[in-house]
Image 1 (cartoon, rainbow, N blue to C red):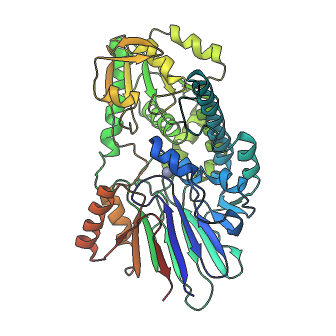
Image 2 (cartoon, rainbow, N blue to C red):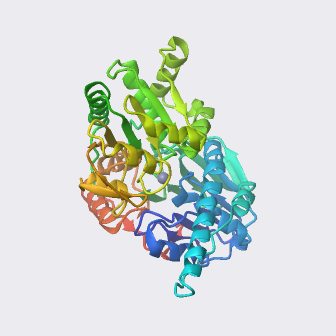
Image 3 (cartoon, rainbow, N blue to C red):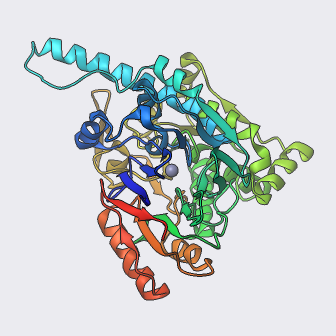
Length: 470
Ligand SMILES: [Zn+2]
């Protein structure tokens, strides 16, 4: 029996990353991610796994983002008992993110229960959380931290390695070499970062693969350059703080984007391109993620290390205030100007950012800087689309603040970067499979790979299996 690989998620879409490899001797997963975005995703998350969690020997986790790690607690709750291997930074981030994910689900379940009771049985939908905080914590006990570039054997003769993916702290390309004569080398790109992305080192260039899985999130897009992006950010800060004397509000994902922004702000300060900044991070999750990030400073790229050394040695006065208590957060509502407030959620639909928008959107001297992806239907997207007013906490608020949309901070490689990364392989893989992309993005990348490299990649479909080994 040849070994097989089956795509259970992030096939024809960008969330739910989960691939099962069956060598005949052992079955294991690469990622066990949550599907995200609407009711259909919720349905898929609630389906029973297409395999028996008790039969899975171990899990290899590419990084901590919930669409790659979010169903790990459910897997463990349904009988999986093996080790979960990930880089040390990924394990640390999961300790913050998985219990938080569980907490959000528990709260939503309580709310749904309340709604159901109010509707007197007229609403029929499942409302149990996918997993509880207790279950999330239990699954964390299975995690084993592994250093980058270090070979380990989760099963006799089966060799694995994590290599830099340049996407977020701890993110990895996963390399697996199957035992036996074929020695099939399987490489999963994980989520690949755009070269030059703040904080993390650029993705490792892979030279060899027999079976290659590559993400295609932005297979049909080219990002704005980092230089243009930073210029726009500097302009928004100067214009608002010095010119209009208002506040700058930046909605940002707690993990990754918040730390990227802190680094960019420090560097702009170092380059004396902005006035002295009063930076406030108002999100307990972002505070925890920043603490984890600082514990892994050895993983930073050279540019980040240089800025940190300057902050430490020269002490130029750059301070970031991390707000924990609700009272302290509420006190910020009275700030009239001079503050740079970074808060979550990244798409403005939940969390403390909604309060900051409520108090600053109506004031023309303030600015909102949108630095991340805003899904259709989100409050953030309506701001990007320049609607005249929005509803926050039941109150209609006119949008008088300026909205700056700065692109180029995406944590995913664009088409050019994906093709460059593929172009580093010494010879074409026997099979290349495009995963983790909407159909249009994946198909556009497939055409680009055919025309530039002459390879014939496949776009993965959910539930599809491919043979591994000759
Ligand atoms: Zn990711």
